[in-house]
Image (cartoon, rainbow, N blue to C red; front, side, top):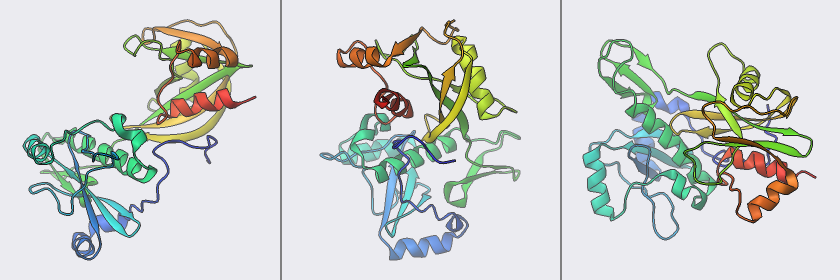
Length: 294
């Protein structure tokens, strides 16, 4: 499937993941000695950033005591993530005079290549941290395959876990349906979303979630693109859909769901009465595409 949305943040990348090198540690070591290599410190999914410019802060050598994880090759340069423990992170913060911060705060300042690498390294780091022990036997896991495989003392393997989620812009005529949760900042509205359940197609998930969350039946489900979203481990699958009915009924997850005409939504955003998610989210891309349609 090809994406319909013209641009989705975090998806434009020239990075070659070179997966064949993950099982070749000696070859990776030789390449790292020959080519320019970047080591990116990561702590609980967070990074250090340079000032000014807010680019990712990287090192020419791995952080002592860390286990570098191979990310890939970009413009003939190697990239590794260096997951840190709390002591290593504190030492590096003291050394650099900066703090590990969330990608959400710096996403729009990064170029597309660094943004993709930041998302990739975040997802890999959080997966490793959340899988310290084997889910089958409880023995400690150790990192293998340059960071992309975990192996416990009993030989049980684990690979990075991704949770598929659907996110949907529902429309009917010149109106779209937006919602908000009670714990969001004031006046923020977004598209409806939910997780795909076992044994369910993504189209079935779209229909079920829209009905559960807002009592809206949908048809004409159209795929619009996808976005990696490791907060902590999702893959957002974006869709548009057409509403069959208009009567809304809230579930317990949402504080409000409203129909907005295209002109009313534009006006509310301009006047600051409604805010939509930031530009790096696929929800923003869906809403922006709706507003741009004649």
